[in-house]
Image 1: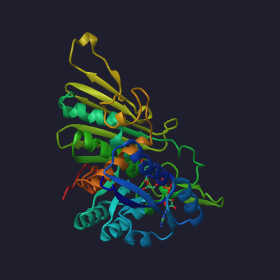
Image 2: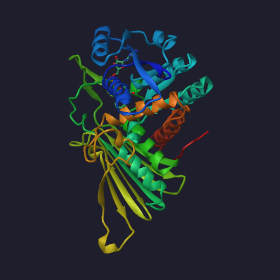
Image 3: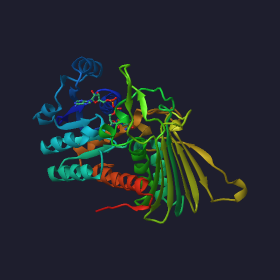
Length: 378
Ligand SMILES: NC(=O)c1ccc[n+]([C@@H]2O[C@H](COP(=O)([O-])OP(=O)(O)OC[C@H]3O[C@@H](n4cnc5c(N)ncnc54)[C@H](O)[C@@H]3O)[C@@H](O)[C@H]2O)c1
């Protein structure tokens, strides 16, 4: 039997996404048929003790504190970028220059200019590049895509998306990197909005124009070390209205101030033949309304997307044995490994990252000048 190819991974960042990705790399070969074997080779982080503890917990073979050394190593095939957003650009450029395949967290980067250079570097290097908008790999969202592609919703009229959290509703919640523009590139507009725009593009098509209103509610927050306050310089909420190339229209609301909403990534799509509703907090379900059949028997029904025929779930448990947040990361890891060892394509990729950034940047211009802005796709 031929020996299975090994792909050595180096992960940069070891906290929230570092854990989610490590679990993805570990579980992917246990539940999916992979054409290559992911090897958890190097974990990189600035805090050496924390990185060592992380490596021991997840089975990373080595640790390193300097990411520039990691991306230059000859024995690394894949760079997994799980660091704050301002670092994605430089890390991706260096990884591409060294011929490494890239698995990159979202938001893609700080803006369109960086996005263009990241895509150009990846294309020039001929590497496989993936941007982790993980929600595309929820089985219920795959079902939504299938229903749309099969024409079950008919002509699409409306996208109505909300991505609401509440972890900043308390003005005493301390400062963190997500509240500084230079590290995060913006507030929920780019953090949550990038996920929503990615899903809208995936399901509805490209966005042609956008108008946007942003809000700031709390401008000073306690320093996490306990002395004084720090200035918040990102948006606290963003409302977008968009027009799709198709003529459909859409609305987006992104906020971290929606008390009671924890990770409420929800959307509704209305078409000439039917509608769908998805809510991440009930991620195994898709609400589907169809105009077919007698109107007296029509109504929204709940599809539990856990049958073996639904994408990905046949590899997990029997029908009704639901999956959770971390599973979409496992699906992404499996697809990425098979892309690297196969035909080299996976989506969303850096082109999707650029398109998404163009929408969000056009929206930011609109929020500043008060006008509807075209989305440039040059
Ligand atoms: N896909 C999703 O749904 C999702 C969810 C949360 C966060 N994210 C994204 O993932 C990225 C990371 O976010 P997080 O929540 O894991 O952040 P985090 O603050 O929990 O972790 C950031 C990690 O980066 C490391 N780091 C920072 N600077 C570094 C440097 N110079 N060299 C090496 N390591 C460095 C830190 O040590 C830490 O381990 C962000 O871009 C964020 O927007 C995506």
